[in-house]
Image (cartoon, rainbow, N blue to C red; front, side, top):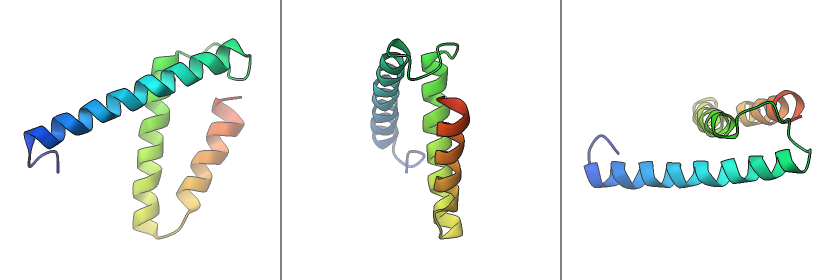
Length: 82
């Protein structure tokens, strides 16, 4: 839809930016609490998580099953946010 309407594209981009800010704040809070590894850049990690989640959602829709979301969750919580 963003390709069809500049206003819609701007709204989507603003929402994604806001979501990224929320993720960064949560990651920093988790790092301060010792619950998320401290050697990762919070902004880069937030972008990765959002991009990966969006990709998993798309693959879930294509595959018509939850396996991509299960895989996302498994990898993120077992290898990235540990």
